[in-house]
Image 1 (tube, rainbow, N blue to C red):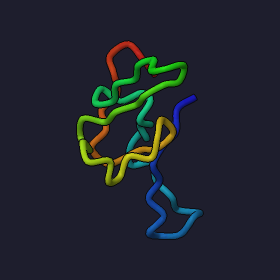
Image 2: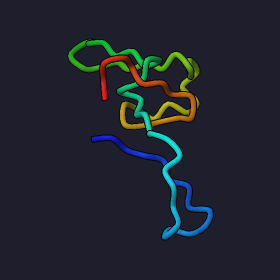
Image 3: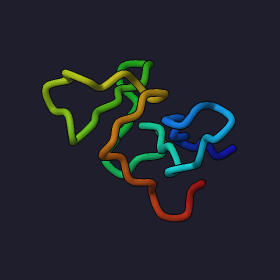
Length: 69
């Protein structure tokens, strides 16, 4: 299910869609792998883990992987 970014500057009744939200799990910059029985997730845009909030997070620089919705 797609999630969208809304601009509510003029109020909720005049909200407009400004783009589609891309979660970390769907982003080209995220890598996941099996690690000791768990899952390790790494964001190449945030190598210091300053803003990465896990697979359900998002950021303004995300790009959707090809062939995924």
